[in-house]
Length: 372
Image (cartoon, rainbow, N blue to C red; front, side, top):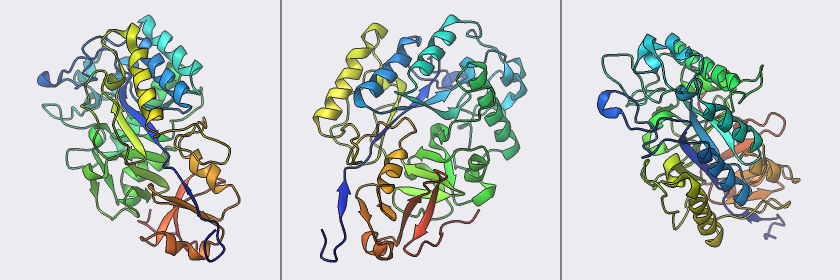
């Protein structure tokens, strides 16, 4: 209880594990010959690699996010319609169209939906709009968005591939989460930029390092940027190398996201994937980084199937008017009029309980941030 009679509640930092480049079947780094970097795993991927993610989620009581690449899931060769999306252009083909691994992995992803969630990442990760491959699919190396009309088609085909593989319902759209390929991203362009496009297709949450994000406006907080109703969370740095197999868990977690790449959680022998996962679980829980969600909301890792943002929604809904969340120290109070005393930036993210979308509100409830 504070001197003013307010209840001052501080909860541990919510942690979300995000795993990039899930979905490749061919793992070989082909960048030396204008092909994708792919996952870099020194062996072919197998369905057990998807089961490993589910095991991690099951044991931690959360849903790790699998940021998926889908060109190797393109059964109908739809990418021939998007010549800039692959290194083969209109001659696109691949050996996995009829492979039984597709059905086996799709079954795991659906059966284990309580223990993992699919995130939009890309089709083939890079861009082939010129004579050579360029980084990356959604934006160039400076973070300038690729032509909007082409990206609209990329997102349409991404959704179609999900549906074709039974990973989305017949009339279902895209997952609400997005990780930009190679972390090429921008903030501050309003409805004309990537945030406007993502909002248009129902994507509400992005995770990417702010250090590599092109910023045409200043993010509202050090770790959250909100534009067009899309919340971007700073992924930070310090992750293992993208193709480091069976990487060691971090000694400390200083941000809301543990960003990994698929090989980091896998073993060279897929029958031993569980050993790697169990090491991560032991390290995270043993170091006090994570706990299962309890009904009070005082937790480190969420277990709510609806996604990591529900951690804040649950806390928000426990009788408070404003959730002050600066992603390092979270406070709840009953009187929103004094919110500025809890946030040095003068405004903090607010989550709309009815829509589940993010916005930004100051102490008086006025919206702020880049217009859309």
